[in-house]
Length: 364
Image (cartoon, rainbow, N blue to C red; front, side):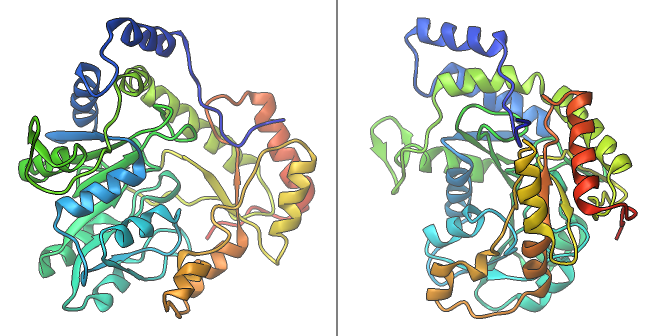
């Protein structure tokens, strides 16, 4: 079986965990601080705040920006549901606009039309490891005084015009085991705003700025030193992991036939959290089944856009977003992780080409 994802844990991570266990300092401590500092430097920002997951990073970031009941956040419907759910957690309302059919990311030209007097933020998602088109998003945000909260949970090390994601607004990352690096479970908020960083630190720790003095309602969203120790070791490998993902993606793009391969617009560094193709003519599900029968891990990320999920429809979301809905019926992700061998890549491409016929590779 060739897995769709495979965390690569080495001796460095194991030794780092043992050192923490031996220190007696297991919860949020010096390893968390060291991880925060190293991750901030990697992203090119002043501050980073570690949390217990990517979802809690989004939740805390929204609270730190003052989002609450009656507010609206413009975002994409084609993402993991945590992006939109975090907006609901703070009492605000997600406002969905459609996606670019080539990049799968939010269409900036549709954002401006969705702004109302209740809009307080834009949440672009750097989906599958490809940065959203940030210049027009930042322009609109600046024009209307909106916060920009980047969902970079799938895009560690991705770049837009030479600048790493998570440094354009307030960035949120996940370290779930399938991500480009992992802490087993964990998240990170990145920012250049000292006030936002301070608010995030307080909210993740029961509203404390001084021990046992609680200035506001907060949560227990802390990262442990055990998780941070793994993260520090993984961060040292991130560029190597990403370069291997990029090389694996290049191999797939050069050898696949009969599918629409991922686009990488000029000026963007795609780090391929997922290598996602389109399978046309209603054949996607048959190809999914065929790959699984051949022992190749695969998945449709995501088969139902957020606005069509049952409980969103129950909340009154009744809109048509054709590109997101079409993508949900056509996308298929193939293994691209750094654990793949050349033989694995050959097996994957041969299987896809067999299932999709001898047609040319489509580029859109």
